[in-house]
Length: 123
Image (cartoon, rainbow, N blue to C red; front, side):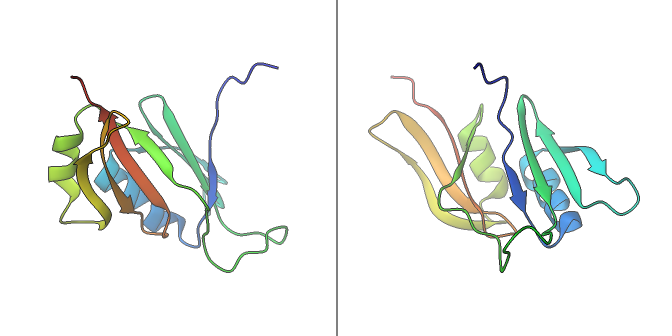
């Protein structure tokens, strides 16, 4: 089997707020909604990266958004991204260089999901 892509599909109770957060702070674009009038699912894209969000349904045991890991977004200029959003979003950890070769920081999105944003450090 060859995987052609991976799109995390995350639950949210408020699609409009989620779309607004990802568009305003992270430069994503809403590329799809289903159904168009009153969506229960949206697709967001920035470059080659895609995230999907859906409303909770009867098949999901849903109390609140939960993810045991984080979503890692590789960005081109992490310092610029940091300076643009550090005072506008909830910070999990500040911008720093790590021994494993990444300069990164962590934020929490409007649903509570943790996003790490970083780039490779060039020595």
